[in-house]
Length: 366
Picture 1 (tube, rainbow, N blue to C red):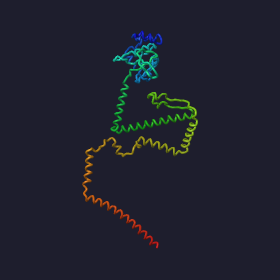
Picture 2 (spheres, rainbow, N blue to C red):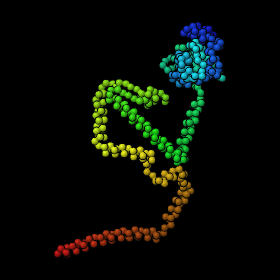
Picture 3 (cartoon, rainbow, N blue to C red):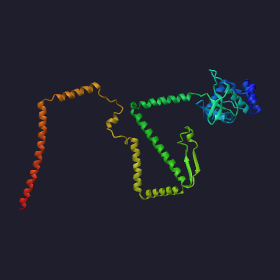
Picture 4 (cartoon, rainbow, N blue to C red):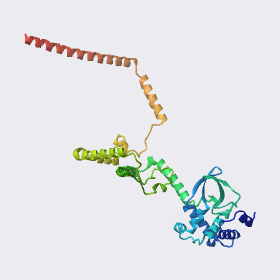
């Protein structure tokens, strides 16, 4: 089908868009500076990195896609200049449509589409291929280009390096292990303190009838790392029917303040115990109790006996047991019996002494 037939079968939204699409197909420079291959590729990198996309499924494969109006809006507003100020500005929607057609029809070295392809949306987040490949405002387009792989390769390198570093932890220098312990304890303490303050802020506002959360999406696993920190806070009115619970929280808080005021010694002891706990935590005193020599020699390789040495020790033990003569075995039995007799004689002596003391006491009474 020719370009003219496609335009008749699928007329653009207005005459200007149709003219831009035809001009882009004819290659007469309707895309402006983006006719240059390097500038177009740089634009594709910027779009892939910054333009909002959706996740869908195409032929049982997870893909990223966008609607035609998204690209037009991105190119014709200040979003493009914010993403990359060095890129040439787009003057009109007609030029944006021409750029979209240029991106759509650009081929790679293998002759296949390089940046994205047009698809039909059959149901929410489900796409299917279509033979029609024209850029339209209401069309859906699936990214093929994955963007610059520099960051991805760098992150892969960090993952491998981190894995090797963790694997080699037993041979780390002692000072690195100490630093790692301090960093881990500091991060853990910061996280626990932050979560505690976050909860207390929510609790104090909640008793007034509102719900306040600092970083409300912090633990939302469905969001990306950056989106987990958006928005900064949330403020909503609490649902009705929680007055009794709020009153209970107020009573508990007042009771705690009264206890801290009336029992300053116990409260000071609580603070002292908390400080001592943090000191022990940083010093590593809460770890399992082992000998100091084991802690000092933790980096030294341990010498374990070989298999031949274990066999030799076992043979020596067996030979020593067999070397005892019958006379020696008899002497050992006699020694054990004599030991029992001596114990019985000692017990009899104690009883005789007690009996004599009793008889002497009776004579004195008479």
